[in-house]
Image (cartoon, rainbow, N blue to C red):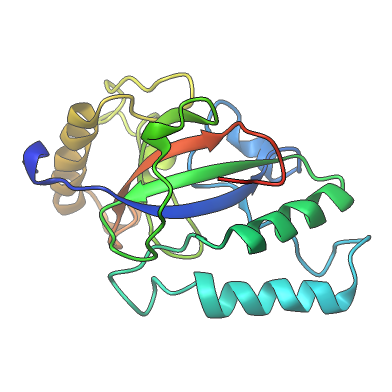
Length: 206
């Protein structure tokens, strides 16, 4: 089993998640990494093509790095970009949440410490999933779907409240990956997320 004392979390940055789209509707009672992340795309109606291309290019060049570098997680630590993106979501009338991520990955590094700003950061729980662009969550997809993991209790956010229970789930999941047919569980490398919801004012100023 993973030793709790060996786990060190680094403050990495933010992801933006739309919560009022049809796609987001599949994730009721779950507030983790999976869902309608970075929701602005070519179908946006009120944002110029030039701005959409800017967002896409920025994400490709500055956020989506984990697939090519195991030290990175695909989050944003650029507050100016975050505020620009959030404002574009507001123009599109998207309802979004801003999640802050701590992981075991070193990069990107963020100077913000959510533990010191309880008035603007609300702790959500622990997730376990891909560090890369599709933000697939094993917690969301496994725990209640598989009879072998259904005994684990999740909090009101659909996440593990306690790290020790998450580690028990991870240990069992690794065992099940060897026992069950390969298509029953995602086989890629997952990481632990410690997640917080930003509940402060906009634009973000920290």
